[in-house]
Image 1 (spheres, rainbow, N blue to C red):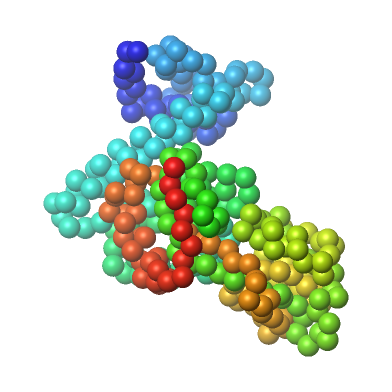
Image 2 (tube, rainbow, N blue to C red):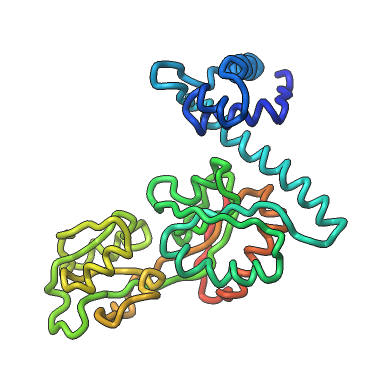
Length: 301
């Protein structure tokens, strides 16, 4: 098959249409005309030999081929940025450029801030952005795979492979605990408050074996809302340690015993970004705050 040579501007157009969902919106983002963007996309599709977008009154929706092409385009464009930053850094010794992080809520609130504080003090030229992503479906790893984040703070299943095409490692294991209103005489008799991101593969077997845990009476938006509801006396919850970092004194945290489940929290990135200085220094800061002790193993595929 003949090699396909797409120019960076073609990649930017492809990404803009995928992100904006239409040619007109992409044109406005790029400062171009709608006809120029539409013409460019047709040219890209001819080069690749596939249809990248479904056109209609709804705009332009990426086909499966378009989704994959857009993900690769984002990653190529990001590496062009990294090329410039790495070359300048080799000359000046400074680490500069963007660093995009995707994290689930409790990691963004409690795991990242101390690492980012140290990173800012040591490398002020880095432009760090953090996006909070629900750890459902593709989650934070999906943001990395799609080229929208350089590194994701993700929940990882011990002994399971990382998502295809990504690399990473476990940073810490956090235990689950029973959380209930302080002073309640029989906390296990309370109704259960839960949220959609809870009880992944790392807790499912344990959860199913606990006949004292009832079906959830209330499902909240996130772990912060669950903690607030428990604090107000509305029930009990089973929550991981990160979610309990800022637990108010009105709640009590009870150990679930030696068989309690744990959640592995780690980072994922792409093989190409793992070699960049910006990602390496962030991982170094995260590891320095969470030494590599008693960590479960995950494998790359």
